Each structure stands twice: as C-alpha cells, then as structure tokens.
Length: 419
Length: 113
Image (cartoon, rainbow over all chains, first blue to last red):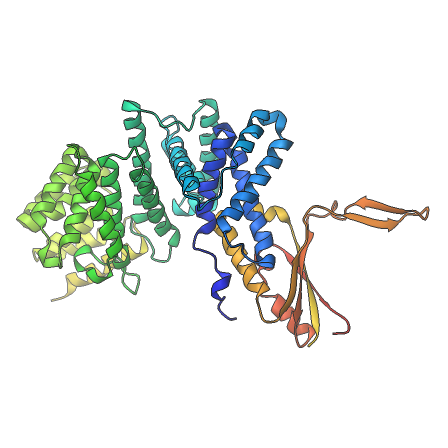
C-alpha cells in the first residue's frame, strides 16, 4: 500500500485542539451545568467532518467549518431541548454570532474561554483525580480511553471520575468566573498543580513508543503557556512553564535508538530541543519578578543549570545542590531528598551522599522505591564496592519499574561484574 | 477495466465512542481511500433512516419508515472502484477502513463495465 499523500493528512491534533476550544466556547454559551451538551455538540460536529470531508474535501478554513457546524448543531439541540435549557440560551446563541476562528478578536475570546474552562476544571471543590481527568477531557480534548491509557487506569474508573466531576460542577453551581485577590491565588495554585501533575505523569520514564505520554507533556506545556500568557499570570506560573519547557527539551535525548534510558549527564546535548530551551529561559526570566521562590522556581533553576552547561563536565553542581536545598525546604519529601543526594555526591563525594541515603532508606515511602536502590548501587559502584552495588541493583530489579528502567538496571548490574 | 461497487454498512453509534484524535485518524484514513487511484467515485449517504416506497396489497403506492428499524447497520455510503476481477476488488476492499470501525462491506460488480 502506498503512503498517504500529504493532502490526506490534516494538521496534527487538529480535532483534539479544536475540541478543547469548542467545548470551552459552548460551555460559556450554554452554562457549566450543560457541559455535556457542549461536549455532544462538539462530538457531532467532528462526526460530520468525518462523514463529509473524505467525500467533499477538507474545507479551506477547517477550524471555522467545525465551529460553524457545531454552532448550527447547537442551535438545533437547544431548540429540541428548549424545555431543558430555556429560551435564554437560544437568545445567547443568537448574540454569539461573532466571527470565525482566525479572527484576532475571536481568538482572544477563545483563549479566555479555555482559561476559564481550565480554572473550572481545577476548582478545589472538585476532587483532584476528577479534576485531572476532567481537564484532559474537556480542556484538552482527550478521549476516555486515551486518558485511561495515559494513567494506566481502566476506562470505567476514568469515566466514573468524569461523571463525578460533572456532578460536582452542577451540584455546587461552579461557574466559569475567574476570581480576584486571595481566592485567585488559591485557584491559580490549584490550576498549576493539575498542570504540573499532568506534565510529570507524561515525563516519568516510560516506553518510548507510548506517544500518549509525550502528548501529556506537550499538553501540560500548552496549558501552562495559556495561563502564563494571560493577564492573571504570576511569576510562579512562569516558573512552572520554564521548568516544563526545560525538562521537555531533554525528552528527545532521554532515550537512545534502542529505546534505552540515557542518564542526563550522558545525553547527547545536540538532541536537546533548542526552541524549548529558549522558551524555558524566556519564562525563567519572567519568573524572577517578585520575591516568591516556589517549588517550580527551584525545579526550573535545576533544569536551567543543566541546560546552561555545554557538556557534562561543566555542570555547576554546587548551584544545583543549592536549588535542591531550597526545594527540600519548600517540599521536604523523601523523593526530593533522594534527588538531592545525587547532587550531593557530585559536590561532596559519594560517601557523604551514601550516608544521606542510609537515612532515607528508613523512610517508609522509599522502602520499596527502586530508584533509591539504583542510586545507592550507583554510588557504591563509584566507590568500587562492586558486590554491594550488585546487591542493590538486583534488589531494585525486584521492584516495580518500567521496561527501559529495567534494562538500565541490568546494564548497571553487568558493569558491576566488569574490570 | 471492470467496476465494482463497495456498499458500506455500519452502526453509526460506533463513531460516538471515538475520541477527537481517533476521529481525525478515521477521517484521514477515509480521505486516503477516496483518493486511491482505483477509486472512481465515492459518496456518503444520510444516516437518518430513509423512507421505503412500495406498492401495498391494495395496489396503492405507500411509503414506510425504514428500512433500518430492525437492524443497527445502516447503508452509509458507497464507492465505485476499478479492479481486474471480482477477487481483486474484494482484495482491495479488505484494506478499507470501514472494517477497522466495526462496519461491513458488500462488493458488487457493476454490469457492463
């Protein structure tokens, strides 16, 4: 079979991107209680595209076509359900005739709609796991199956979370309002946390082929930029975008041709994404306004220090250790402490870091964490304690971790037997 | 070269389960098929159950709703393709995306071609 020609391929993720925008737009028009009606309308418009584009060709402005068709379908749906939604909605629709996507004013309105939507999805009144699923479904246009795959959950679980989230929106009368003052600060924190969670979920080591996880990183970055480019952006929001961009820049180099994990130090820096690094530094600079040093600031500082180094030898480890000290002060978690131990080894030697790790090993949270054993093995190997190192790598292999991580541990184990 | 008609049947509710990304993929696959060199013509049919016209027992012409009331599968579209033989036409039809989305395809020779 021949490869499809270019004209058979639409703009990448066109449907998913437009789904997020359209659902946000129609939810504003219909009201949050009718989120489902908005979703159905958008789904129907995409179905119409599927039914007509192959036969009549792709319309010149595909986005505008989708919006127009969805709008007409929405008017039909409202007429059919008038008793449910009321005449006010129909009048609202009539007023909404306001140009097409691509038009600067409409684009601005759509960005605002998306921003309000993500704020509602991440409302603290909605439980966190439901918020995450709802954000990905409505603001990002992912399907239930895709969300389930990304989180290694089953579809029924995700579907239940979505039902719960929508019920919470209805019952608590959540609105698309963006609050002011202290409430805005809290709500924004909640939004940033959800975005960061989505990013980390995608970023955590995984099989290279699993594109859906890379999509999560890209989507988190997109949502972060949406917030950071709005009038309510804070230095903290910029710090989050900086950290995501700088970390995502390394994604192409993190796995080699064989799909094996490559540690940061050994990565081919030519494969880092220059554009993302540029974006990261841009937002890092914007994050410096004000005095707040958030967890995102510290993380972005670490990622930026790595990005600045021309090669592995010129990494400023003392600075990285400083950022880890700050991070640990903000978020005293054993996982952060473990990461700090790696930097500590670079600055003050493997034996000091090992002493730290012995303390951490007593943490119940880290007892069954393969990374603790892997780091300990690595440091022991550095000190020449091959047998003990091998014991740690073997123990790490007994614990749950991904296939590339497993291969990495086996390579380290082999290294213990050499020389 | 002889022409064959591919009659595409499917359950429209199958589509409702696709995510936007999956719908885009499906659109691209169908688009690719309408542009195949052997595809001479392709059309989509309305999915609402049409009306069937027949002569009733009393000799009057009547229209009834249907014919889909009994079955979930709807004739959703048709392609006219060129192939050297019926078997070749079937072989080509086996690659059609309709089959990836739970549908069926009926292959019929167009007489006189």
